[in-house]
Image 1: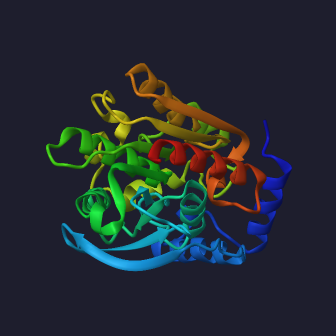
Image 2 (image 1 turned 120 degrees about the vertical axis):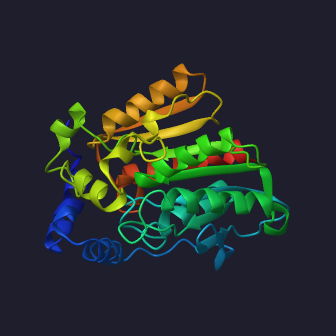
Image 3 (image 1 turned 30 degrees about the vertical axis):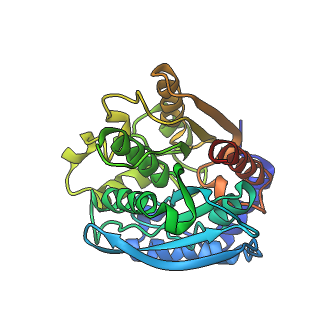
Length: 313
């Protein structure tokens, strides 16, 4: 089906701002365009109990994080470690601040948003290393952070969904104490080689993520094309999904990543992982972060918060 009318109106507003396809811009300009687009929404932030900026130790220097706590929080809470989207090249804690606030408030959990390193300044696997380190840090410091170590979820959208699944795989396969309780996977990038039929159907004219965007991200994120086969870059290449935590996987119908997200959900279930897959008709890539302007974004965020609340309470 075509894009829903409410979403078409938002795209028209984006066009009026003079926004260009990401692959036509330098990474620095593409980042600023994304930041400016979010600021232009002029949304009143959700009020929370507290929001704290902090730096935590990482494998190659400190990692900036933002810690969100709900109002009236008492006792240790479940937590979500959130990795923002943007092709491992653009995006920030600020562009995804609204999502973090909504998950914190509606799921009544602590949210740790990670400002991981990105390409081209810090190429693969820098983002993976930072996201795993931040998640492990929260687990190791759970008591001091007022968090339950056995109720830590990982989540993200697009590149962030990719990182969430990769962190889950790493946690499963290591001998340390990190245990992931749940996964929130929002239209994750599963394989940077692309080429599925949804690339042909929705590769142009369905929002800012186009078929041409993926080679752009590959160029700036990966060191060379041999890394396309590394499951930490393309988690669809992982040998097995057996033993991963349960998941909610959200896809958008009019998205070049629809096919690979659908395939991921099917594979998770086939390999014994309880995965709830919800596909939003008439939605494009990026819709999840467009609340409160977009009704389906509000609904998708409410669903995600509900599942997180149940899994982490």
